[in-house]
Length: 214
Ligand code: HEM
Image (cartoon, rainbow, N blue to C red):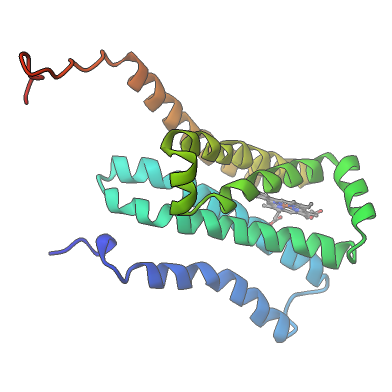
């Protein structure tokens, strides 16, 4: 049987599922169910989903290797763009609803409150990643340079978790849970990097001496 993850259509339901949290917030707003402080409610909702999609994006590489499901790579770009989408909504809510487009006040807040500085850093670093997420940009930058640039997602993930940890006043259990998950996902990459580095160089393939197993 064909692997459903490799199917042409699987991206459609996954994409629609990614829109559900945003549509849910719109629906709740329409029904007047956003609680006593709607701005806080939507800020928290979009912040949560930004972090969730960052984690999902980082989880693709280990999941495809550990589960032997290379087709999972097809979802990495979509998850990354959803992280950017929810991050942009989160930021726009802050600019429009929290600061009524007063960019001076907004930047004062960014400079004055460390948790906002962290969130802002995390978001700004996502912008070049979203812009260069297309096949055209991979070609233009070259695979190696593109890969290096996209490692910025590691800093975004760490800054996003610190942002969350700093803004929480007393119960830090949820941000700590995210810290553990992001920590494990980054540790996996570090271990893989060391393993790759310590592997003996592959024998050169020449006409006289073909590589072992060739
Ligand atoms: C990658 C970027 C970001 C991530 C992952 C992120 C994540 C989060 C999370 C998880 C929350 C808490 C949600 C909850 O309590 O359930 C939150 C709250 C918040 N974030 Fe962000 N955020 C990001 C960027 C930003 C930016 C750019 C700003 C503004 C410049 C910002 C401003 C806020 C504010 C004002 C709150 C509410 C704080 C409070 O309740 O006192 N965030 N964010």
